[in-house]
Image (cartoon, rainbow, N blue to C red; front, side, top):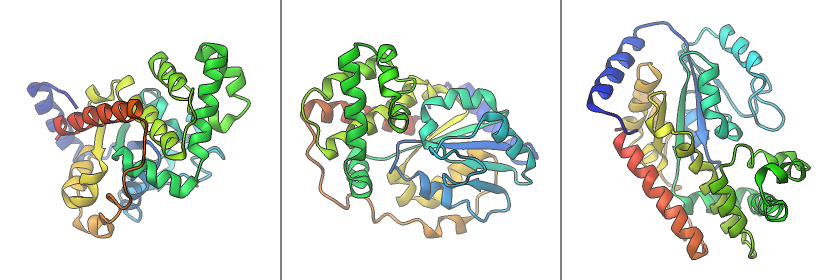
Length: 282
């Protein structure tokens, strides 16, 4: 996160103070699917200081893998004895600012991974599903001319419409252009990576002291260091045992997928921006 020196010092003192208080910390892991968000969540499972609500938790999530109504989430937070209440509502990544505004003392942990590995993992797990989503949205954008006019048609597939929600005009224009030609499974997953991670900057999370950006590759290669950083951000003490189950074997497991030059350039540029934001937040 880009911050001034004085702000850095203030945030450090603030976080150190909170470590010794009992104020609850609602935390939300966001980003793009297949970016290591589940691994980050799992390392906190079983901790007395952290209550973890996974995507499959019907207490916290709807059948569409989104947060339940905010009043229900607040009631769930209020019932917990743990200091940190951790959620992973990936499909709500476009609502990060709304979530931060809704819950007192809440934090966002945004995890990103190289788009090559993310796209490969998405295709292995879901085949053409992400390609179908972005093509459906892109074709409706091209047909209706704007996201606002296209939404009634896009909403005919609610599980796809999630990824059009709060999409910026700039992203909508790119998606329209990128889906005019046939889109492969890997290209579709790369487009999804771009759209979801672009939300980090569109919501100015890079300058928000209540957000922390985490690079997957560093997380799995330096788990103790990165978990110490995350715990400090969440105002809890770090334990080395949390990092024992983290492995780095998924990095570069498959060859880089074939992605059209214009999409490859956009993803590479966004990855550079994410890396810069992550380095600035160290």
